[in-house]
Amino acid sequence: QKFQNGLITVGEFFTLLQVHVPIQKPRHSHLPANCAVSEPPTPEDLIYSQYVYRPKLRIYEEDCEALSQMIDELKVYADVQDQLLVNVNKSLWEVMRTCSDEELKSFGAELNKMKSYFTKESKILAHNEKATLYSKLLQSAQEQHEKLQSRIEKVDELLEEAESCLVALEAEQVRAFFAALFSHSFFPFLLELESLKAQEEELQSVLHLMWLVYLRRELSDLETENEQMLAQMNQLQEKEKSCQELLERYDFTEWEITEWSEQQAVFNFLYDSIELTVVFGPPIDGDVSGEDPSRKIVSLNFESLLDEEKAPPSSRLVQRLIFQFIESQGCWQEKCPTLCYLPQVLHDISLVVSRCKILGEEIEFLERWGGKFNLLKTDINDTKVKLLFSASTAFAKFELTLALSANYPSASLPFTVQKQIGNIGEEEISAVLSSVPIGYHYLRRIVSLIHQNLLQDPR
Image (tube, rainbow, N blue to C red; front, top):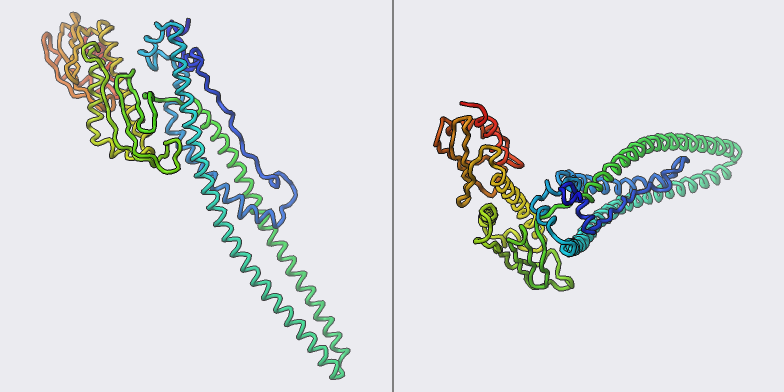
């Protein structure tokens, strides 16, 4: 009932078609076991912290920052599933609500095929991202290993030097002992030797105390730094959790894949009215699936499948604007020389198709409900839209011509005005258009503001 009344959301529409997208719960990282122990860290713990945990933490922080930046770019599309289907894609809703149960079931099966394909693609992307992360961790571990190895070599040199000093000292003590023994001054020498041993023990005690003070100071600094890092890690994990939820809810595409073989791939846009054929080069050695990102693309060909005779004027206008954008980009094979560039090409075309599709829906709305805005007639000539306004209360009748382009609605529209009755001309229309900000439903807002400011009160 909600589907027929237009009150169904995009997510509920997927559920109705039995297209279920399971959402994985995020897996949180756990701190090393030694971080949870309240006992003072051992020298081994300090070495692990300096040469293992901290470098790994820096790598994970960079990866988390990159993920956060990706999430910020995709936040715009995060709430699409909670919006009404009629607002997101009115044409789809109007078509689907007239379908039978078998047609809905068939459409749901096709969507599940697409979901399966995108699931495999997401796994491949996640695997590549993990491989990149692990390579960074490996490189960092190798660098820290080299630093630690260098430090061990220095310590070994110091130990060897200390060992040689001890050997020399023992030899000197033995020589002094025998010298005193043979010089008949053995007992004073023993007293002097006992005094030297006492001084040596006192010196060792002082050195040990100084070393303990140094270690405690280092330990205090490390504990403070660890507490700060733990707090920062908790904040990053919470942020990562929220970003992951937004990623799982994100779903945006304007293309549909109809064929993928070893030789070519075929994509359809705008209700199968535009076809993109991508011809692949020879497969790379070792690429069994034929999906190696470095595989060359021989050509990209766009073809219109729209029936010009049967299609309404708004659909023909949308088709012209999309191909205007395609032709303005020059050689597409240069933009997409290998398979790794194909997702960006599909994304760029999807953005233009989405904007032009909304423009077509706006024109269809004005053709159906233009009378509410004193819009007498809507006519399309090539890429120009002619709007004939007439209002007896304002004693005015004029024709507004707007020149459209593929970058609609991101730029102001050039226009001309032809007065037929009354005093409303280019100056008055220009004042109204300058107050309409560009963006979503730009054309409808222009018509609404002209009706509100110029055609309601008598002039």
